[in-house]
Length: 196
Image (cartoon, rainbow, N blue to C red; front, side, top):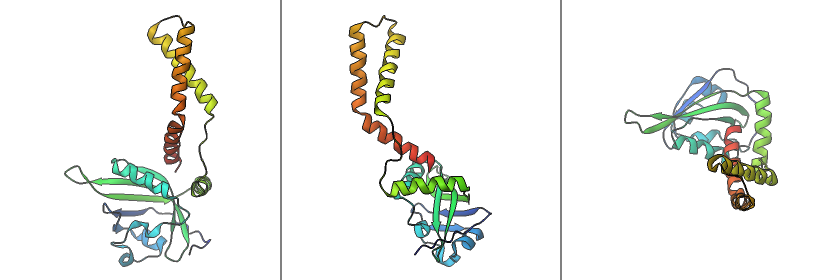
């Protein structure tokens, strides 16, 4: 039961979880802002704070980064125990053990700026509604591919481009263009992660 009351904070919120996302450490700011006691949080999954406005795709991207041993940064809307909410600029990193393997995750969250919050709200609402958030003009991509391949032909083969070569370049561009939906979906996924 989310409310419309946003909670403000000014100090970093810090937590640490095991590999399954179960909380093993939180700082006092985490407790104060979330409204949960240490006893209520310890051992619970971090998604206890997940706000219903947050799209699942954002967290899928988060865990995709973490599983590759990479740090993830993004805007996250969390829910307090009483239903209030707070926005954070979250930086989540894997924690490595002495053997070099990931043994858990650490998160440091700071207040999210108003402009970033507005952009995230728009983006996440579109994601929740299944809307495309990244559009590419397919005609422009085709033209780009055509001239890119044409440039490579000239660069690597040092030949005068005759009609046969032009047809080959056109067909190669067309072949790449047919896989455009796959490419644009990949680019869209990467774009989401950089904005989120």
